[in-house]
Amino acid sequence: MTLPNHLAGGFVFTGFFAALANINILESPATIGAVLLGATLPDIDHPRSPIGRLFLPLSRYLNSRHGHRTLTHSLLGLGVFWLAAGLLEQTLWQSQRLTAVAVMAMISHILFDMVTLQGVILFYPFAKNPCVLPGDPNMRIRTGDVQKETIWFFVFILGGLAMQPLYKQGFWTTYNRTFGTLKHLASEFKKSSDVLEVDYRYRSGSQVFSGKALCIEAHDNRATLLKDGKFLLLDKSKQIIHHTIPRHTGRRFQFSEQLLVEVDLIA
Image (cartoon, rainbow, N blue to C red; front, side):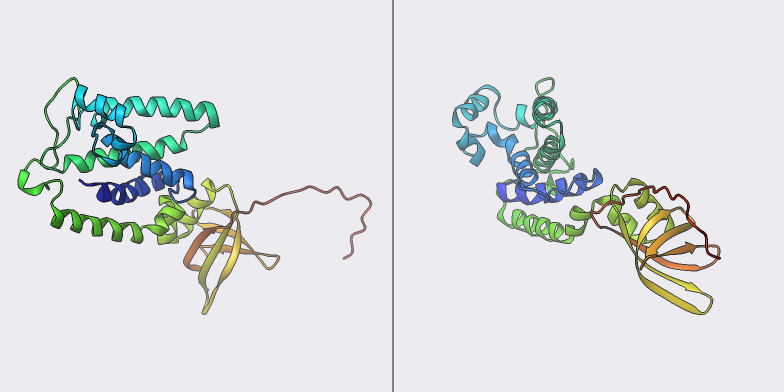
């Protein structure tokens, strides 16, 4: 595929799988840069590619020594980059977040090139047979085919726009918000490090109540919410719960203990 599709498709592919790991690729310039790097890096073995021209001496060496779509498009090349970049990032910043994003984008580049007629030599240098997806050449595309490349570009753009909430919220938060049951609220509560605001709606008798409150405790069948300084108990055995949709606030609870001495109780 051409560069525009590698970039657009790389954002869609990486954004989806990063969301599974609760990484928002749009959260910072660094994560966006990691996607751009990973989506273009395999073509460093092509002197006429944008990244190849940027690193022309290395690009010429790789191309003359190994050819195009071989080492840098292989599992070996991917593994070497993953190990080297991961160790560097871990040493400098005690993290492997950017490496994970870049590796996902590199995988997208390799997969998209496998959809072309030429394919990639995925198991280079141990085997030099091209790997393609799918097997039928009539279903693959020719790199530079303007019509098919344009169609895929707009598919990627529309897919990326549609998945904006998924990128921002993460896969599991989006999943739990979509269903909005007490069980999904409990799942989100258990893995959350901040306070959840819950958009709730339930029926008690003939009355319907709705609103927003902070989640204090959540289980599969019940939840305790805090609304206007008062506790609200949602219980499936006593009420009909229509939905409980969580939203992360970015704030944290702080619990403190106070010792009361010689306090008179008034009946």
